[in-house]
Length: 83
Length: 471
Ligand SMILES: Cc1cc2nc3c(=O)[nH]c(=O)nc-3n(C[C@H](O)[C@H](O)[C@H](O)COP(=O)(O)OP(=O)(O)OC[C@H]3O[C@@H](n4cnc5c(N)ncnc54)[C@H](O)[C@@H]3O)c2cc1C
Image (cartoon, rainbow over all chains, first blue to last red; front, side):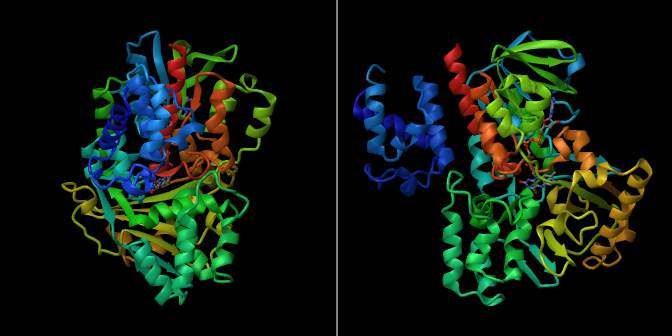
C-alpha cells in the first residue's frame, strides 16, 4: 500500500467511528486525539478494524505510534507493504 | 428468542462461549459476532441483562440499576450497539441532595457544580477549576498511591460538606470510598461531570430487548437457564465449558461471571500459577446493595420531586455509614410516566449500599423481620419528600445482598465488582490460561453500565487477537 492509500485507510476507519469527524482542518503531524475528539476507546476501534481488514496485530505497547496521522502512516507502511 | 438450555439444540463446538449476559457479556458477544465468530452466550438466570435488570409486579415494572449513567453511553451505544439504542438515551435533569449539611438541586455537570461550589460553598473559582482539571487528567495507569480522601484534603481541606457533595454520588455509583485510589474517583466523576446524568427512556426491559434483537440479528446463539458449572482447561489451554453435565467445546471462553467466581469456582485454582493466585487471593469485592421498590396505584399521581435524590440524615458523610445495616443514607430514584412513555405509572426505588455478611448471618426469621424494618425506614424517609405517598402505593418489596447474590451468583452479592486490584487480574487472566478471558465489573472504573459495556469491547479486542493466533 502506498502512503496515500494508508492515509485514506486510516481516515476511512475514523470516519466509520465518528461520521461527524472534520478532516478539512486536520494537521497530519498533530495528535488525532485533540483535533478529532477521539478517546482511548476510539483508538481501540482503529486497532480492531486494522486487524479485521488487514490481519494486522498491533500490540498494546505500540498504540502510541497511532497518535498522529503521520505517525500512523510511518508505523503502518512496513506492515502493509504487501497489502 | 433466547431458549432455555434444556430445550436448545446446540452445536458441539463454538468459536467463543460467553458465560453470563451482564452488559459486559452481552457487549463482548455482540463485538465478537461482528468480528465473524460463532458465539454462544450462556446465562444462568431466565432473563438476560445481569444486574441491568427489571421485574414486573401488579402492573408495575421496577428497574434495578437504572438510576443514571454518564453521557459517554451515547457514543458507546452508537458504536457498539446501534443508533436506535443510542436514540433512547435521555438526560435526568433534576438531581437533588438533601442532608443536614446542605440542600441543593443540580444538573450534575461541571458548569452547575462550579456555580454551586462557588456560590453556595464559597470555594474560589480557581480552586474549583484546578480540581476539575486534576480529575479530568487522570488515567487508570497513573500512580494510584493517592487516595480520594487525600485528593479532597488537598483541594478542600476540612470541608466535609464539599467532600460529601463530591463523594456521596460516586459511592452509590460504584461502591468506592474515600480510601480507594483517587484515580478511580477522578475517572468516574469526570465521566459524569462531562454533561450530567442520563437514563434509558423505555426502561431496562426495552434496552435489553433491543440488545437481544441485535445479537440475534448478528447470529449469536443465546441460552438462558444455563448455569455453567465448570470451565474445562487442558494443559493450560481452554477446552470448553460444562453445563448440566454436557461439555461444549470452544476456542475461547469469556467469563462475565464475577472474577472471583471465575477463578475459584469455574476454572479452579489448579488452573493458575502460584504467583497469580497470590495476587488473586488479595482481591476485595465491593459492597452489595439493599433496595426498596414502591409502586404507586394506577389511578394515583405523585408530585415531581426530582429524578434522583441523594438523601441522608447522618450529620456528616462517612463511607462506612453508607454501608451500615441501618444506614441513615439512601437514594431515591423516582420514575415518572416519562420513563416508559405509554406505560403511565409511577414507581420509586430506594437504594442503599450494604454488606453481605450483615444479612447473610441472620436467621430466616430475623431476616424477614429486618427486611420489613428496611421497608419501614425507607417509607419514613420518603415521607419527608412525598408526604402520604405510602397510602398511594399498591406494591412494596425489598431486596437485600442475599437477593443480589441469588440472582447473579456474585461473591457476597457484590453490586460493583471488585476494588482496584481486580482489574489487573481480570486483564491478565488469559496470560495464565490460553483462551480464558474475563469481562465484567472490576477495578471500580470498569463497572457501571458504561464501564461494563466499554470493558466488553476492550476484552473482545483481546479475544479477537488471540483467536487469530489459533486459527
Ligand atoms: C442496586 C444496583 C444499582 C445500580 N445502579 C447503577 C446505575 O444507576 N448506573 C450504572 O451505570 N450502574 C449501576 N449499577 C451497576 C451496574 O448495574 C453493573 O456494574 C453492570 O450492570 C454490571 O455488568 P457486568 O457485565 O459486570 O455483569 P453482571 O450484571 O454482574 O452480570 C453477570 C451475569 O453473569 C451471570 N452468571 C454468573 N455466573 C454464571 C454461570 N456460572 N453461568 C452462567 N451465567 C452466570 C449472572 O447471572 C449475570 O447475569 C448498579 C448495580 C446495582 C446492584
